[in-house]
Amino acid sequence: QVQLVESGGGLVQPGGSLRLSCAASGFSLDSHGIGWFRQAPGKEREGVSYITRNLGSPYYADSVKDRFTISRDNAKNTVYLQMNSLKAEDTAVYYCARRTKFTNWKSPSDYDRWGQGTQVTVSS
Image 1 (cartoon, rainbow, N blue to C red):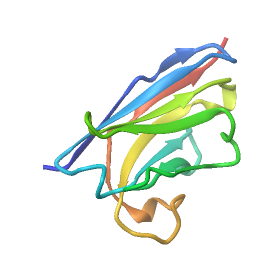
Image 2 (image 1 turned 120 degrees about the vertical axis):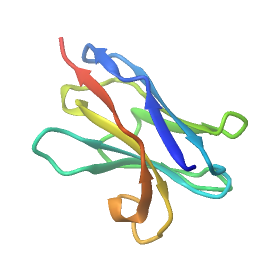
Image 3 (image 1 turned 90 degrees about the vertical axis):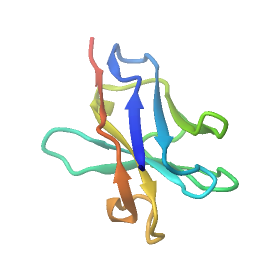
Image 4 (image 1 turned 45 degrees about the vertical axis):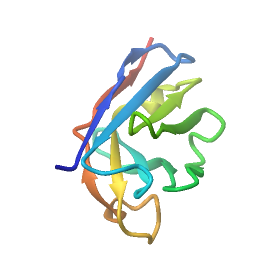
């Protein structure tokens, strides 16, 4: 059974850091790329970062480049999103998803399985 479970969200002050985890089961990270998305209230879901299958090459949205780092641990079948220098505008529910189509990594329609999401709130 394919499953993705996010964890690591919480409340953090501006400038702080969080590390999100996405634990995958029912498939191998070697066979599928994984994307991180976020959705703030009243806004569309947006692609934040993506890591490819095989080589594990990272991609980032301009809004998080140089602040967020995506990585994976194949032995744990887990993908991480290290978020530094957090801003109020990073506040959202963060989701990880498994990619099965290759139109645009930022497009939610490229992904077939999603986690339940984890809330990230950046506030003083």
